[in-house]
Image (tube, each protein chain N blue to C red):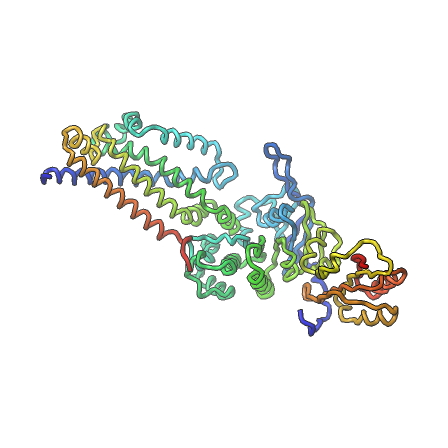
Length: 221
Length: 365
């Protein structure tokens, strides 16, 4: 493989990492509170707002059920509004974030719902406010599950990022399609796949280790 | 219990002085769900918890005891009636008002409800953090509490590394962190083995005696009532069917539910051969099986020998036990004697005159 190609693969890897990192960061920033709200706003819960919960749930489901490649095309006007352009690596971050946010919200919701209701009751009995219950009980107790979920989200985002070549986004997927497939360069395709495997493996291992560190439930005396 | 028990003079039941918690005409209904009728969890509850006392509410699951204890700190709201805690009707408070009251009421739970992500120290510190107490003050408050419950050496452990009894000790320390006046115990020992149960009950007793904290507990185990309570209320189908001093209620139960709870803790099992041969009707020339109960002051009277000499009846002792209930001796004795009338009736009457309980359990050939 020529040094030229190697440089190309390196640049694409950085593109992919950049897109995924930014999308995951914004997705977590928005998805975390959204997920907490989804988990605590049904009837009779801490922040009971059943109507808003239902509407948000519907929006989240709609986004989640749209195939990513269609989402990318469908929200082009929105992408242009946010990124100033609808093509390029920076623009590709918009649909990735839009896809990541509801995904992360659902993961956070699930992890929060797993927290034993007895802990919420104990916190209420101490006189904790709903916000204190979220900050001091729900999020810390749900953290190992949230970390595992975020790991899953990042792995999915790496996969999604391969599709943003459709709107001129760079990255490994785009490289694989343009060089490996359209220019008949199987060695580039193979290299792209290997790099993706290594990336996903690294992300997953990191997430697993972190979640295990955070999970104090599995300790044995 | 060994034979050399020194019987303390009978103590008076704790006077129903100033009530720290008072339920007045409290009912709680849960709205009907689809296909189900409205549930009446509690119905016309009147109950006073005297300051400094340990009061137990006993009932089977579904009797309404969980609802009852949760009314005290407003985790449940009554449908009608009032729950007055330290002069404040908690039923009339909004959530913000309740939060203030809750900080003066500690609560411990059957399943401990400790945060798995926090160490022992941080679990005990949580109510103080919630109340906005500073780090230095938290340390000063938590260390002695860990000392009190005997877990100073576990301060940096996580709940997953502790035994059930240790977890409940953390729960108790946590409940005491805000220096509450009341401690609510929701089936606090039901998940523990008998030995651990005993040690937790002793700790609660100490907390009551040393810190002067009033304790309201709910349980389905008469053993718990017997070991630490001053007063007991028996809950059945959302109503209190019997209430009073523990010694009185346990030694002279008036309601069948109370009696059924007692079967396992007071009195004695009949020897299997006697139990199997027992008949309800008198057997000509046979023997009657009699349960005699001794309470407090007359537990020491030599009644059997006196009866034998005055009535000329020979008693055959089948089983017996003396135990302490609420710190007072309570004995029960199962004897057999000739079942022929009028000798049997005379014996029962004579026992009654001596202030003893006498109950004919049945007859054997």
